[in-house]
Image (cartoon, rainbow, N blue to C red):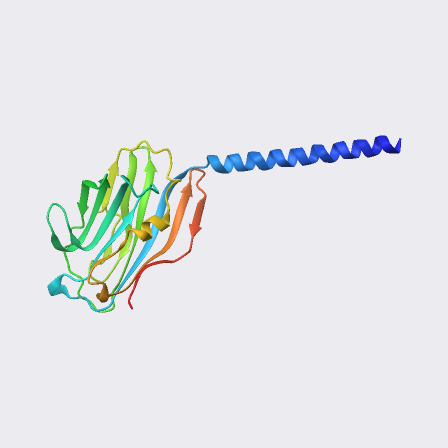
Length: 217
């Protein structure tokens, strides 16, 4: 009788362990199925001594739904200058690229130059996978030169995409391909301050790691 009870206990223990493993597997599978549908990057640019007569400094940030450096779909934000269709000083320009070819661009209707010592410019770069397509947008911008910017549709582009999610996004890709393109000595810092990923369950996952793209020596 004792041996039979021990056998039943061992069987019960094995059954419990199997159920726990099955539940863990289901949990992992469920987590893997969750889709990232929105990404927000908070950026901060701190100017040292700008040179408006030389259109300095010039800064570009990049963000992409993909993690491959070859032939990717991405967007760039040019700050204090514009490059398309021709170079223009001042203002901002949002451009969407594919295979390194620009095919959509939008400009801020304020062509002011950076001209204030110690100015801080903050903004949020957004990728949003919506029914209408993939939205690239700048929102929640604040600065002395351009005032409040973003969110009005001036720095926003929508493109068709077959991407099922933004799960391949990496903030390290954004940081690695952003920087001060001209007059880095006139910029104190350019930092990707934090990142928020929104899942299709509406859960928001925040990454508070600060990624320093440029720091004055």
